Length: 262
Image (cartoon, rainbow, N blue to C red; front, side):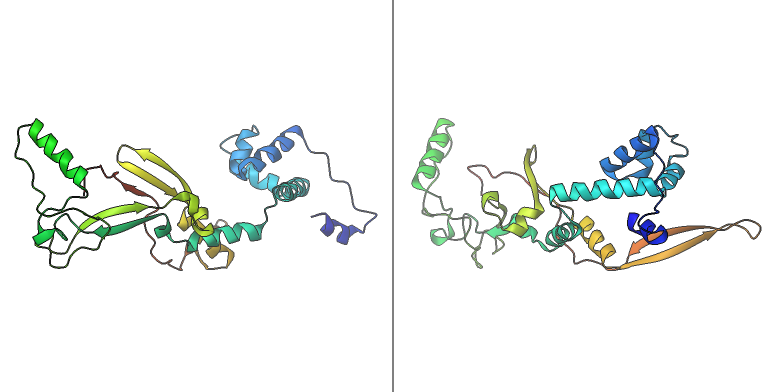
């Protein structure tokens, strides 16, 4: 901003910008919080009814714009963040694969690999626990004719008479300690809910919109309102015309498997 004034007036004759009022200074401070001009104007004490117009007027003020630009530059230098870094992060989020965080698998059922396709137990200990539970409830003692060694992670047997080769679906979560840099950027936390584990991820649509806007992949449409005897008001809306590749859901919620399930 100042270099433009130097060009117009010369290095020695640049007029000093007028001193800002306390409310203008407050507007600058509030604007730097979230870069929202309307909300900054309201928090600075301007009327909500005229806050939008006031923010436009304030941001058009040369002194205010110069201060904001200088403070943003200082902030970026302190944080070590620039536009290239932000765009690179958005690109990483957009191209990262959700399957690195959670995967949907289909494994074998209990009958797929049992002897003669009878029920197969994981271990002899599991079978003995089932026997004790049945005897305590005075129920029929389970047999172990299908043998031991059941493994859910095996692929379903294509000729299994019980599941017809469809197997049992299950979800596998990644160990977040060993994520790739791309998946780590996509990952935003995990929490236990009443329905199971929920993995939170960065918003791919927002990342796409940011990159699309930066690369000029936005189609602008104009809506014209008014009558011949009055100035015409223009409302401009932007719409993304490039459709991104369909991505998996932003979060995965699946019930935790119980010890005796599968």
